[in-house]
Length: 458
Image (cartoon, rainbow, N blue to C red; front, side, top):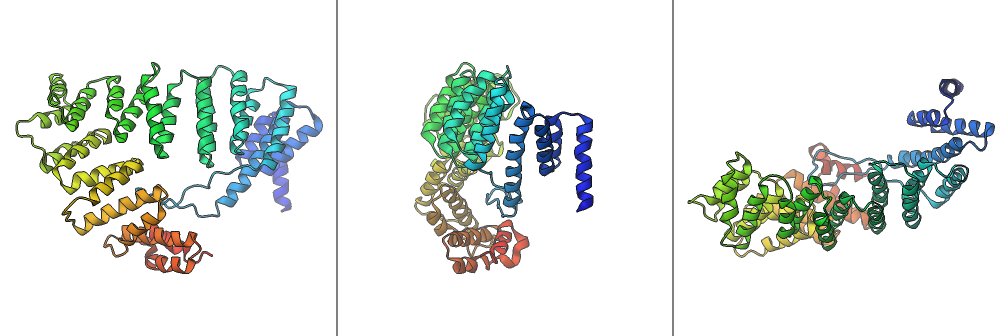
């Protein structure tokens, strides 16, 4: 211990001798994981110069990082499993986001407010307060501080992105409404930043708030500042929402002729007799593209609305936004595959409301005769959809149908989700009955590993 102390003391003095810059020295120590040493160093500076603004700022920074470091270290001891069915190879996420308690935040705030009284123009401290309020879930203080930070910030093209990150901090910590309020505040401060509208649309979309998503997508498409990324997002999300007019409006503002294919597909899906016209225009461009190949198949004299043509079109892999239309239209054939692909495509793209609707429509099809593997797939992805919608009991009934599946991945997932549900409800004996079904084969799937891990958890 004495040797380690001497080493740390040497490092501190080495930093002091190297730059005599409190910000650089303390930051270097914290990056090296030496938060305690950074705190000692800051205290030494403050003893020599109690009104040093850099030292006061770094004192608050050290207190914040010390708390975050300790909490993240504690959080890393808790298993934070990746349950996503589409991510078969990843077992664990990083530590859950840390919420800074009011008692800790108040002490840091006092330091930084004191520093600003000495030097009100410090942009770094103004932005630091934004971060602090976001990490401590102080929504109203953050909304006010965003405006103050902008007033003091220098001209920086990345400032809107930085301020939007503070909005996301709230969302990461469970305050969705606060996140959206902060997003709206940042957009009021930077109205030309159409990307913020697109980001808000995405947040609403992936939280299942489709009407709000559609509202912000429409605003983003109509904005004169919309760039290709914004328009591409509107096209993609509009297609998944089934708002094809919105998707087409976005596509028409993008370069190239892809909008002709989408227009033709939209009219084809709607039964418009003039659906071939835009596809013909696309072929006139003589482009050797996937889109042109799709148009050629659709315009062929031999084209029929049947499963063979469906497979030929989807095999060209035009992208999810185009496939949505193909799945929807070819459900008219009555075949299982277009129905299932439509539902699973919505599920994969986190459009769970539409996925649930599509799965239920599939389940209601008369005389539906399925192979065991098809039935397993339908139950598996519908169960995951319901789980993501927090409709856990409905998901449970579908997972139970997979307990005898010959697909071990799906069977082990069923054991995990059912067992974990009972575990969370306090029925731990019943939970272990399900975990034990696959825990002995922990190496065979991540879900079996989860079950094995939970066998001894109290």
